[in-house]
Amino acid sequence: MSGFQEYYDAVSEIRSCLKRDLIGPIEENEVLVNIEPLNTYACGMLWARRLDQPALDASQLVFDDAELLSEEVEPEDITLGNDDSISSANKRKPTSMGISATIPPQVHTLNLLFKGAKYTHEEERKMIQTERKKHEAGETEAIERERVEHRYTRVPFEVNPQVTVQKRLGTERVFQDSKRGLEITLSVRHIMKDGSKLVTVTAANIIKAAQTGIEQNTNAIFQCELAISSDVSFLPVYQNSAVIADEEEKISGLQYRDVKIYAYGHGCSVEYDDVKNGVFKVKSEFMPTQMVYQMMPGAGFFCSAVSAGEAIALVNSTVCEQVENLSQRVYSQRPQ
Image (cartoon, rainbow, N blue to C red; front, side, top):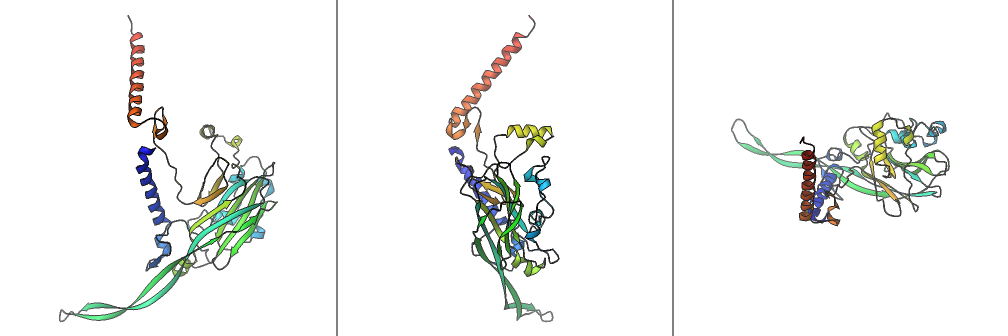
């Protein structure tokens, strides 16, 4: 791998540039002049709700025990219609995002982290000197015109609540900031026989605003990042292979049976470090990547096996040996 480090560094640099351009921010305390934030960044944001969209009522978000306990569906695939906090993450202008993970029975509290930014707007009227051409004389004259300059200033924020996991199925509001329009809910979606729970943490923008102009830009939440951490390692998300009927999916399940998934996202992807002792933190990611390291035939990872010259020699000798064996078999099968 060391021989390809400069290429890996280039990939990381490209990803960093794309993330800065698509999600932002370009600068930590940036000020966008005469350009709207929603026209600058493309993803990683929670839009303000439409004025005619009904507000969430967390007390009415109750899961159907019969459907959750059914053996014909997988718990991680259940998204009930009355849980608007999840369904609103799968829209063209998402107002929420979430992460689902499985926690062991002894976990009763979770540490949440949400990072984001809002943009405040101010305008200034300026008199600008311009020139105007006189058609009769063909001369120009200096005139003053009023110009309105719009400024959007980035204001980052961060909240870090510690929440208690409820014992029963359902959804509870665990954090709310009415000024910023941020609401965080915790849903217990399934309780396994051993007491472990499949939970979903959702961050939502609860502000209602017009869908055009300054109001929409100042009420959206940008550069969103949601994280869940625990003192005890998360459990792999339950996957029921018994209900898979497709042959290709069964083959895929067999090939990746040793690959463990510790979380999945709603309106976003997830990232986590699978360390030796387990996974203790999962977080959202809007630009997921997977580094594929250079592989050499018969040598495993390039950095821990042989040099480039040795690897090429190994490949050549292997190919020559296979060709020689093939030619001998063909010659022996010829009629005498």
